[in-house]
Image (tube, rainbow, N blue to C red):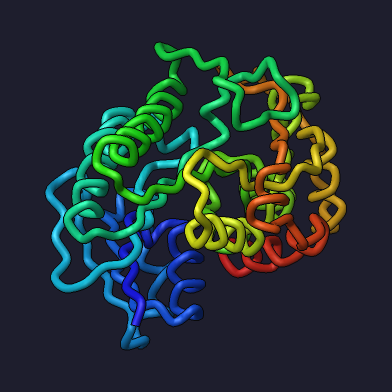
Length: 310
């Protein structure tokens, strides 16, 4: 039996990861303090004898008895609404939480993966973003609490790799969507879908020309799993390189929901990236991974999920 510990395992991505690991034959310990995660995301796993949930804040000392092979560090508020509301918790889980998770990994002689983010690139001056790009981040802006927490987490991960010889992996996650996202988490797709399903005005920030590249959750988890099982230690972008504007995305969602919603425009938030597109050459060559789910298919599944929640 392969043992995995997933921090932040009751979150959107963490819960999908727990599910994938169980399907791969792992015995999974899921840790989450539930400040942004939800038991609803994992309650269907409770009957699985290979799944254990522990409500715990991983900025404290982590202990799990017995053998552990893999530690997947996903604990962190991850949407702008969350990390603007929880700035200090976000910084603590990126710094103290990563330190505790790495110390635990070292003690267990396990392998570690940090869920980092495309936000490490900030408002990028290189397009598409390659892993060698160091980013353009405002450390004292409102988004800095998340961006710098993740950048620090990457530095800490590499320090444990170089100094202690811990087997580490770094995934830079680009915009991801799918079932179990929270309706009110402040990200574009949940906002657009919930507004369209309710027949409300759909809110686009700025003039809607800013771009994102959105990846369906099953593709993302597949890339992350392949990265953990690989021998590559430097950061790898995982995301869908198909770029589109926020205005295009809003129009697509209105069409797919058959909504009568109109689009309205609001001011762009501070330090909001104008462009976002992963270069996935490394993922393709090293991991033999690329996204398979077409956006229309993924959006339809996501819309059906949100219909049950509204």
